[in-house]
Image (cartoon, rainbow, N blue to C red; front, side):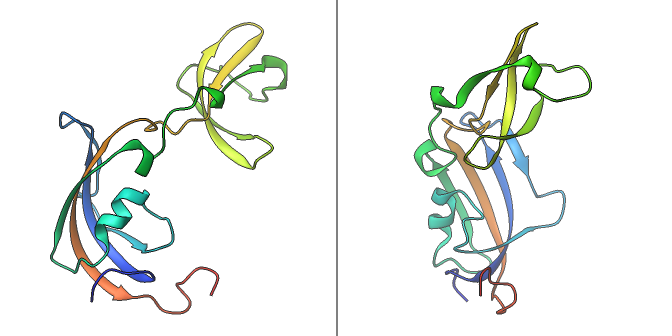
Length: 150
């Protein structure tokens, strides 16, 4: 069966930055399974998978616009420390969920001082070109129960 919308796809993948630095890989564990066409993968990888079958290998370089997007300075905000509710020491690099008015988003602490905390709501890989090496393990049609909103 070829990969198309509502196919359950199982893959092993390695994700690297340009230069070969490995960001993550599934190859030492269980394959990743997802339902194609549900935005479970970044758009550039999902489009490269269409029409492929079990046993195929896909290598694709995904530009930021088709990955986690471009970085936006508008997503960096300064928050008064007194409205940041957390018991314990807050340090740069920590990640928190924040209600932004547009839903809950994950933010990364950039700087901390006595009065304010600077957070970044950009995805950690925003602005980066992502290189995927994917082995397609299995492809099957999703059952009605597996398809979201069906």
